[in-house]
Amino acid sequence: MNTSNRLPEPSADALAHSSQLIDLIRAEITQSGGAIPFSRYMELALYAPGLGYYSAGATKFGEAGDFITAPELGSLFADGVAQAVSALIRELGPDAEFIELGGGSGAFAEDALKRLDELDALPARYRILEPSAQLRQRQQERIAALDDRLSARVEWLDRPPHEPFGGVIFANEVLDALPTTRFRIHDGEVFEEGIAIDDDGSLRTARIQTDALVAQAVRGLERNLGIELPDGYTSELLPQLPYWIQAVCGGLRRGLALFVDYGYPRREFYLPERSDGTLVCHYRHRAHGDALHLPGLQDITAFVDFTAVAEAGHHAGLELAGYSSQAQFLLGNGLPERVESLLAGADTEAQYRLTQQVKRLTLPGDMGERFQVMGLSRGINAEALFATGDRRHRL
Ligand SMILES: C[S@@+](CC[C@H](N)C(=O)[O-])C[C@H]1O[C@@H](n2cnc3c(N)ncnc32)[C@H](O)[C@@H]1O
Image 1 (cartoon, helix red, strand yellow):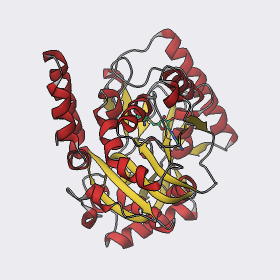
Image 2 (tube, rainbow, N blue to C red):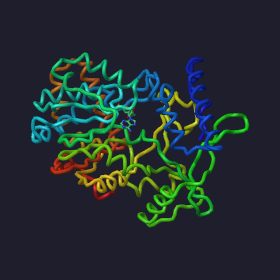
Image 3 (cartoon, rainbow, N blue to C red):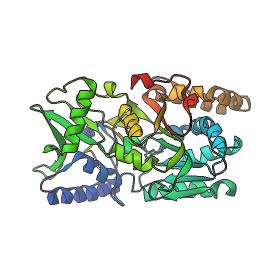
């Protein structure tokens, strides 16, 4: 779907930035003999050093950016997660760590630290794994403004911790930002979607030979679902997910990993009507499906197959602690009581803002049902966090 002509026009500087990135992508396509896999395109469009959407200076989050994530709405989301894991952090003892993957603007870290402090559940260290140097700097500036007792606990990681630790791993909207493979069924065979250069020099999609790992993964999910995907069916999968989950959770000796994102159980992900996959791009609060539009200036994401996350967790030796909608997770972990106490001391305007936040976080037509929370645990029982609305049976 090409919706580019209905999207807002970027400034001349922004266009020049995108052109630089397109040149880099073209050079890689040429070097690779005419096409690169979509996953590599997405990696460059989001993370090419200095040029990719997450690596460069775009505002990204919030009203002035391209999209709003739950932590950007206000403190309630981080409050809710902090409340949910606070007993666990206390149980794990004074060495417990909190590891946040993909810290965004730092809003979640700031609010979660403040709330964990109030709940007497501050972790020994709060570590943020953030691949974008630009976002890391924004997070560092934000954390530096906090009370020393909080900011002194925060560290940044270049890679997942190898050394064993007990604690909580948390990721909001990180899985959807992992460079995804796009595949297409053509004449009964599995091909990968690639990106090539058109006659006029612009980027276009192309069908390319897929490697055995992707073909096997597609055939595996067909077997798993008892279906045969029809000709022309195009969708996404993350063949690297088991390795990624193993890498980020490998050091977790005791504790819980929580993944929050938009997604579905596998049988809903590969529905016949989703025959062009689940890619969503965000540019100045417009969602559309054209991943080739203005590389470097827009976010590119894909929905998450949560069955695949559960399987990857299982391969990494983790238990599936629970799976629920974001609304059920927050409502079941103290959100109503928290809101009640905040409303009591608030003026009319603050009350309105709180109510709006609750609606956006929990209403089914908003983030409440679109976002899911999955918990993977090791050495502890964290099922109580999912006591309200556990949907593991749907995976
Ligand atoms: C959509 S943003 C979400 C940011 C934040 N969690 C929030 O909810 O506002 C995706 C974040 O994941 C980060 N990210 C991307 N790939 C990652 C990876 N492999 N490991 C950790 N973080 C990653 C991005 O740099 C960015 O901070």
